[in-house]
Image 1 (cartoon, rainbow, N blue to C red):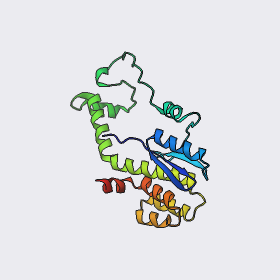
Image 2 (image 1 turned 135 degrees about the vertical axis):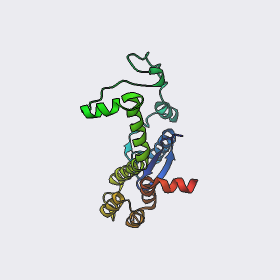
Image 3 (image 1 turned 45 degrees about the vertical axis):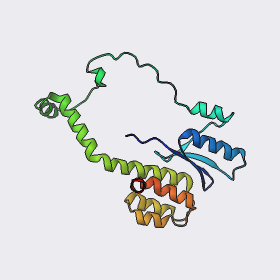
Image 4 (image 1 turned 60 degrees about the horizontal axis):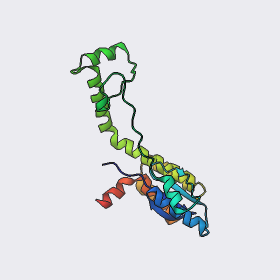
Length: 195
């Protein structure tokens, strides 16, 4: 099951919306039109980076611009491989000893490489997920909290993976910014709460 991308918008340090981009964009539009204290920014929860949103026009115009474009029909696949299975031929450069080992594997080089990649994805999935979460929290914190107390020490403990000290370092931050930074940095805590 793929997790849908969510966005979170803030009016200054106050969270005003969180969810799919069209909903967040409408909340941003409403906040700005009703005289937000500002600045108003929306962040991609996957990356922690600011997302530019065009809020000009009516609410329907805003939502229409954000609707996914209809999928274009893919051109007929060409070349070697098994295109119906999604196999794509690309060049791989290896040393002779690597080619020798691959060719001696059951199924040949392609099967062996696919197995190696799948195994690496399985064994590093948790570490990769943690890295992405840390990076998202870092980008969000850099955009919102650079001048807040404990910022630099919070970054140090974020990259050390020390959740209790991270929460402690953010204690003086505005509640909405603090809670969002923690949620981005340690998403597995949220997943456990909802399970």
